[in-house]
Amino acid sequence: SLYRIINEVNPDEIYNLAAQSHVKISFQIPEYTSEVNAFGPLRILEIIRHYKKKKIKFYQASSSEMFGKSKPPQNEATLLKPRSIYAISKVFAYHSVIHYREAYNIHACNGILFNHESPRRGVNFVTKKIISTAVKIKYGLANELLLGNLDSVRDWGYSPDYVQAMWKILQLDSPSDFIISTGELHSVREFLNIAFSYLNLDYMDYVKVDPKFYREGEKIPLCGNPEKINKVTGWKNKKKLESIIYEMIDNEKNILIKS
Image (tube, rainbow, N blue to C red; front, side, top):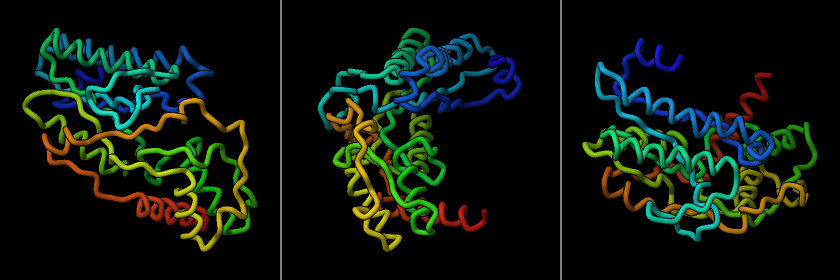
């Protein structure tokens, strides 16, 4: 059980990154998504509340998807308007953290993460789909890439940078909630151009738009304002999108060559 694990490890800090994290899939398995994303954090908070050995600090990985239809740039005061089961479940966890912090004096924080990428990104996300397919095209293992709205924009950061932000948040004397983002918007088209150009390819020769990949929520961009975390913790994202894409491609090439 969760209590047994926490009791045995006796941690100083708990970082809850566990989630069913795919927005589209959350519509297909709403109950499971809610069980993991909403009630999982609640169970941990309840254990921390009654834990006798020490006061445990808790970090909850919240999501930019919680903002939904709220116009950018989004900050810590922006109204939450979730537009998916995934986002709704994350809002439940977000408010649970605030409730336990205020009602039971638990050192609990939300880090509202905007899109963050690395070579470990799952294949069911558009960034990894682009990288993986582009490399396969380069090596003659694929000949086309089907995508949705190429003009959709996102605030893309680097996962290791964001992990550092999480740690900095829990080192503060007073718990609070923070946006973790770059504050910059880039389009899927721009992502494609960087990735394919790095492989000496032209994405327009291989990419086809398929309307089935369009998402309703893409009409309003998610772009975070990281001013609060910059000022309070000194954190700033370091790695730019171009370098992130290069690292992802190099890793994908190495995997393909080894296989």
